[in-house]
Image (cartoon, rainbow, N blue to C red):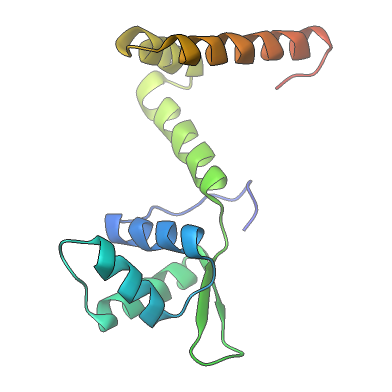
Length: 137
């Protein structure tokens, strides 16, 4: 799945399993189940995890290596790809496609540390320099 393709909506459990696979790398359904149940206050059944993993593969979010037993599941999308799309979707929905409005809201409504302010200033300076050099970001 490329960064240009739309990533389908993920339910909370689907997202939790993808997040586990981002951390662990390729894993069997049993390994995903055990990892999820170690972290969750509400354990899942093996059949539930297998159904969710299969659904994620059908959505093209996961890749399945069927050349070995047990099958190994791995993400076809990165955290960065998903984050970029979800932020873009959020800006479109709530800020009419104007990302500056979201950025301003976050700065206004958040108690930023001096380090965070410095990081933000550095990013703005880099963005400004890129624009002056003729590179649109």
